[in-house]
Amino acid sequence: MECTNARLGDAGRESVRRRNTRSFRLMAECVIVAVLAIVLLVMSIAQRTEIMRACDRRSDVQARLDLLKNEWDRKSLELARVASLERVDAIARTELGMASPDNMGIVVVDARPMLAEAEVAPVAAGTQGLSEPPTVLAGVATIMQQMAVAAVSNLIAGWFAAPPAQLPSVLR
Image 1: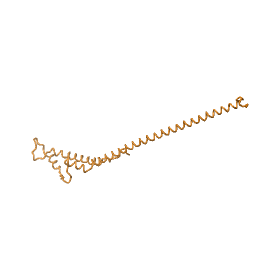
Image 2: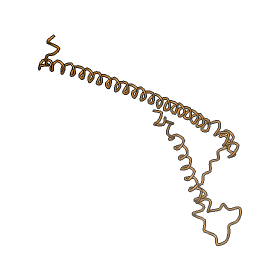
Image 3: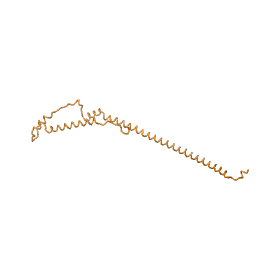
Image 4: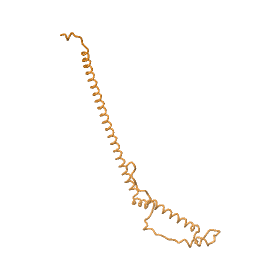
């Protein structure tokens, strides 16, 4: 019974300190583990939220892509309809009054004799008679012929040099 009355020595104080530091260390370790668990939980929730946002953005972009593909298909069909040869032929016949080459005749005129006569014939002071060919038209004939050849060659070049339809860069 002397132990109860004895004073606490250095050894007793050390054991009390160790018990206090053990409980403090255990509490600190529990707090660290709890904080780490909370941080991991928050990071996991943030990651899942970002994944859901990315899926939503992907769905929106996929829907936009589908709309653009549908619009591309509609525009391609409209272009094919507008540029179809049957439609162009029908418009040329009805609105412009053009005829197919089978119904047309080709007349070849040799203008050389008329030009030779125009160069030799003296220019009359008055107006010419109705039986004489007009000399102004003989000079204009070559200009008109060159203009017609140029116009036809430009039309043919424009028809065959048209670039082919390509996909827009958005759909590539």
